[in-house]
Image 1 (cartoon, one colour):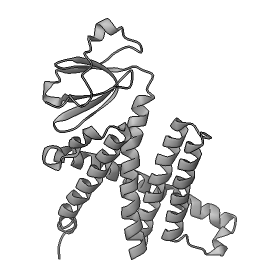
Image 2 (cartoon, rainbow, N blue to C red; image 1 turned 120 degrees about the vertical axis):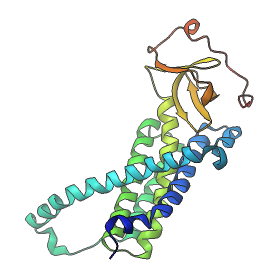
Image 3 (cartoon, rainbow, N blue to C red; image 1 turned 30 degrees about the vertical axis):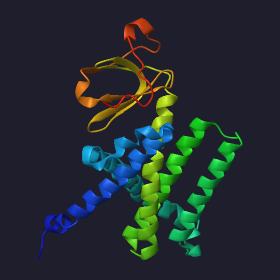
Length: 245
């Protein structure tokens, strides 16, 4: 009889493939949120396979964190349901209903954002939370009672969660008020936020400009004050589209 380790080892290759797919979607969300298509070369799997696997690992970790929190609170929810006699209702939430509610929220989010009714920071944070909760619930439903609907919809929402998480990183970096990281490379850059790929590091400067540095050229990354002087940074802003060597 195979041991538990041997049983799990069968799924290692599948897990790597899932990490590659989710990591690619995550990186796609990062680059597409910049609004500058010339940076799509950062998604090259030949050069950035490590970044894709690590990014996919982040998505899977957060999904299982949501899954774990639900497992902790579900016994308490069951006791409360029994206390208030809600368990007599004997109803189940279908995977399609979970997906419909989450997708309906996403549509409403974009409509409200287009009309300026909801602030960008609130919109991004709530959207990320809703998508990950939906993906976690679908994962929980599939684990408790495997079926095709739960499997397909959980995979779909995992990809959506990866894309939204990548985009939320860009929004959070642009909204950062300090302290800012100071990246010392062939040119010094005071950035609101940065993301390191395998070969390149992508940084968003205080004025919103996007800078791409070769990761191997970075000598040190420190934390600067909330409003460092321009003279201290010595930044030389490159022309757009000319960052790649």
